[in-house]
Length: 64
Image 1 (tube, helix red, strand yellow):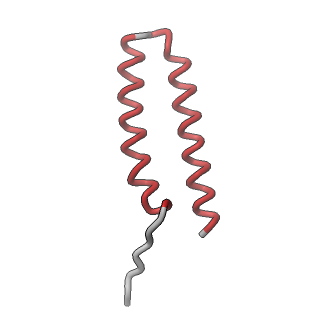
Image 2 (cartoon, rainbow, N blue to C red; image 1 turned 60 degrees about the vertical axis):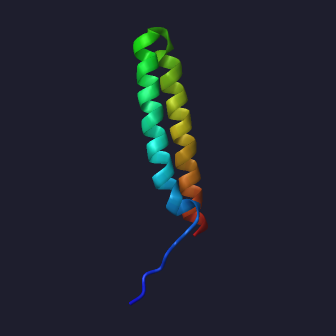
């Protein structure tokens, strides 16, 4: 029984986006603590970025 080594964006996607989203969440949290008026903008931006990443992931799964 051989194991297939898959390469490409789909395999890298989970390893790359999770640390990026974690760093972004920490950074946005610090900004919210310092500048309380930024909360709606940062939450909206976070959701937009997360949604784009979900779309990219779903399109990669469909192409396989």
